[in-house]
Amino acid sequence: MVGKPPAATQVHAAIACLRRMTEAFARRRQQLALSVGLSEGQWGVLEEIATRHFMPSMFARTRSSSAAAVSKTLRQLLDKSLVSVGLSKSDGRQRAYVLTAKGQHVLRTLRDEREMAIEEIWLTLDGDQMRNFVSFGNQLCNRLEHYGSKEKDR
Image 1 (cartoon, rainbow, N blue to C red):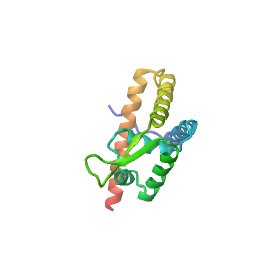
Image 2 (cartoon, rainbow, N blue to C red; image 1 turned 90 degrees about the vertical axis):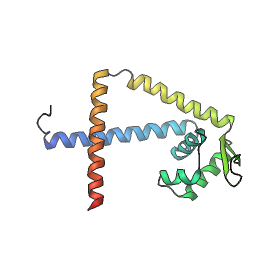
Image 3 (cartoon, one colour; image 1 turned 45 degrees about the horizontal axis):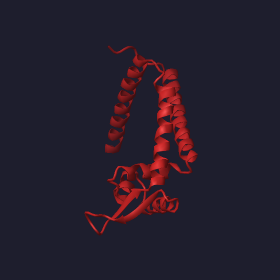
Image 4 (cartoon, rainbow, N blue to C red; image 1 turned 180 degrees about the horizontal axis):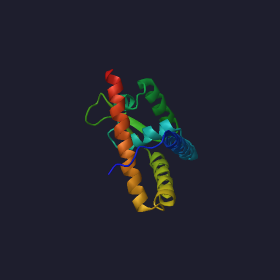
């Protein structure tokens, strides 16, 4: 059942709340990355390399980044001894990036820190409120995406 539409002041308060939440997530992600001597971009590349399906050109496209920026990040990770590079076993023309033991340790530390935050922040919330939040958040995202696709078609 749909209730009455929110007042404009409620909508603006919700937008302000989302902005604050987005900024808090960004700050926390930056803090986590810095705690192990990485930038957020380096962390993202490290996570992707850990999947073992890392291809720099595809990573650049999916992140709306340039190949040069990804190459620079890879050089930084190589300089920090967090990744190593060799030739791909399946295609000798491709480079294969893998995490070093140091890179695995850094990534494990990041994941452990993230899990501790989830336990302290998220898992202490009310389950019904969380389900409502997820439902509302997905509904809002669907509406934003739909609106954005309509705007693109204009």
